[in-house]
Image 1 (cartoon, one colour):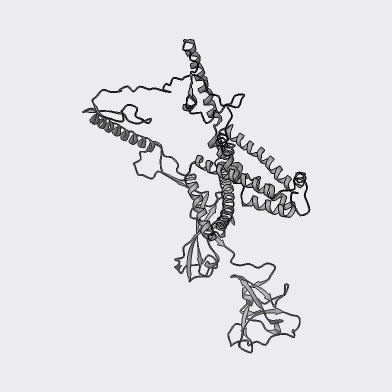
Image 2 (tube, one colour; image 1 turned 180 degrees about the horizontal axis):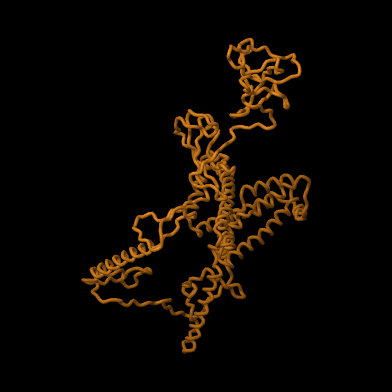
Length: 576
């Protein structure tokens, strides 16, 4: 028999849902702008999009029904053992659907709210809230069948409205046919891409795949259907062989037949050559798919029972009968106590066995071992000491002048008495500090010292516990600079009393720019610390830069190659 329109609507499946997802504000806006700007010239883009869409959606359905997995699960199945790939696929699909649905639903909300406001005379915010509540109520139902029915109604209504609109505007059919020929008028490139892009939406391929998975039978279910039909045919053949012949074996009426009770009825929709549905024509006999008996495993009185009423539904694992015993509980407790005691003895024996052998707890070097073969040891005795000499800990003392230049993560150069150089990494600084002591940086005493802990890579095993090391680190540096010994820089006031940094430079003759400075008078018996002009040295005011305990940077006043005064050398109790 022929199918009615209502029956064909029932078989639409997820098509109505996907159609409603394609026709949104973006599609309507793009079509409107293209029609206003270019008439029917871009009609070919819609035809192309429709044909391409049919192919892609059909491929999406096939790739879902064949393995029984939607596009998301099929993508995960490419590398199912790789957790990174699994989460990457799910996150990409989730973000794609989330962003697309958010943008799409926002457009739908705006368009629907404006339409409802125009029809009912409501304020747009109130209309938007009403539309949002209706949308939330529709999705809150959570039934695929209900959502499919609602979408079938709206899609049918949209189709009728689009058809009426097309007839009312009386299109130029000649221009319509001409618009089927692909052309791109000047300035229409973006509009053509918009028409195609708002139709070929990747998100809908995902939605269509998931909908097909819920609507139609998978390959696994069709396999079950095949086995069910094979079982049914063998049963009919067996009854015929036994002489049970019925002209209508599985069919009494369209409402009372084997297909009504078949769990695969939704997937079984065969039609004959006339287009009518095929029903098996034989009265069927039902039987249980599986029957199990329960036998008592022990003897005892029945002390309780579960749901044992006739025709009661029970679940696998549900307790149906309770047997009792006057001694079974005490027997169980006694056996459990024996098991616990045996387990405790086993644990103690395993611990004792492990204690018979000393195992190295770390990688390193044996630094102490006082045992000899045959010697008796007591529990708790220290018998072997192992030290990790691959990485050594070094503690240095940094004074308060230099502690601000060092921090965790800094590197300090270390040197032993054989001039072997090591690099130490600062791991911690004890800022509590201590007073006094000699500084390893400059040998000065006094001030506050801060212990700094370094880790050092003992790459050649040269470092041993208790060794003394010299250390140094850079507090500041300057490249390509003029440098003089710190003792070369002396300080004298000028005629205005300003303190000046002075270096005495040797010259062949007296320069014109010799500054006027106030030099101290040398008292009888007092040693002179600066030269005189008669000795060929003249004072030069200099600008100093960075300095350490031995040298100082000269930024201006002294040039490279100049001879400067350092100090007097004591020879035979006289100065020279």
